[in-house]
Image 1 (cartoon, rainbow, N blue to C red):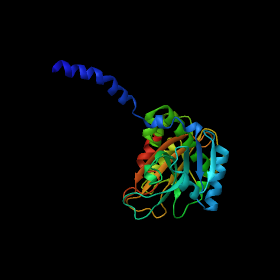
Image 2 (image 1 turned 120 degrees about the vertical axis):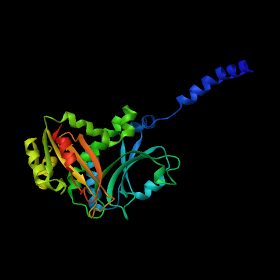
Image 3 (image 1 turned 30 degrees about the horizontal axis):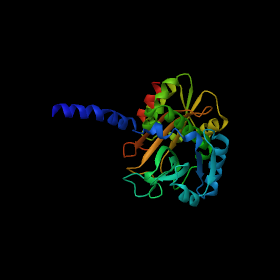
Amino acid sequence: MKRIFVLAAVVLMPVLMHAQAQITTKKMKLEDFPEKVTKVVLSGNMFFDGAFEDAVKNRWVISPFEFCTKEEFEALKGKEDYYFLMTVLGQFRKETEPGLEMLSLVKGGKGSDLSLDKMLEVVTIPVCSAEYPSGREIVYFPALIDIIQEHVQASMKRDLNAYGGLETNSANLDLSRKKRVVIADSDISPSVSPEQLQMLDRNDIEIVPEEEADALMEAGAANTLVSYTVTPHDAGAGSFCYKMLIDARTHKLYYYRKHRISKNAAPGFLPEDLAKIARR
């Protein structure tokens, strides 16, 4: 009997090994990305769509793309022939309504026609407040498009990048020592004390008016990292604030963190964020 069991195990082993080899990772699921058409779904908001469309036309290079309407998306989302780049509303568990407009790249396929949650999420990045956008997103749209593209390419190389999300880019801070760091005054949390702001000056971190920071991004300033934060308009406890440092010339993401807004953690770069950046 024991001999029969051992023999059966030997016979089944190649089958089991084959079954293990069939596990499809996220990296493997993205292998077809360069050949598939990315459908860029327009929201119907003329002001928002104009900036979105221009950024895609000028920056998107990693796959063929076509623009489509929300109605066309609904008809096509169940097909594996397409990826979709689209804006979605982000609502977190403790929020009473969606607070953020997010830019999400997802893959169509079986079951997607039943629920958006069934779609493979490649990457999602915050863009602006859902209710009252500040207008800064117009300047940063090209950079956000490039950040998405870089993440896709990194995800196609390593599962660590595919599953790690944009947070893995914060490791890039180590490579930013020789770069100028500029943070818009509107991106600084009220939690930061005057003494902590003085410490930034000693670490070559510049706090400048929002308009000046945005102008550097728009001009593509060389060797300069510029801040960008995204938070709901009336952010309350339970909402999230996203903080980024982006290279104005290359659009490489050097810092990406989020924190839950609370009484002790207002929107913007917190003292711990600034301490990490200062130690780079």
